[in-house]
Length: 207
Image: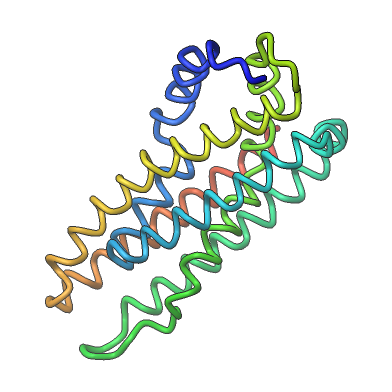
């Protein structure tokens, strides 16, 4: 049996973690501005896929290995920063496209981007490792309880950050007909990617 009485406290803990602006929220804003509502939906599904993978690793205990070897986490963070810098470059390049030209980012890349950005954010795994075990309650199955908590966490991020991305995408839809406005949105997105990459690198160095 699962212990559902812990859910109110767990939901409150998740909100405290998700509501303050962070990398995932900033990323979803950037995706919505750059690609619109559909891109935001694909990206949040990708992020939730990455979160599900992290949650699964914690449930089976693999996450403890990464926690005991911080260099693994640092390598992931550096890789993620490099990927965000590449997104900065490609987004600026897209902003310079002429009217009528399509972005060189295929539709399915939004989902893959979300997966990769999520998987290169080891703070998610650390959150699962630190928080999920605190809400096992009186559950008879430790693994099933952790799996249920992980699913709740993923669902909440899907709703909250997905909504933010879709809202940002509405601005993209309104300004899509204007070349200058669309370019500005892309430049804003590239700036967000660059700031995120810089923040990650500084965090690793000062670490």
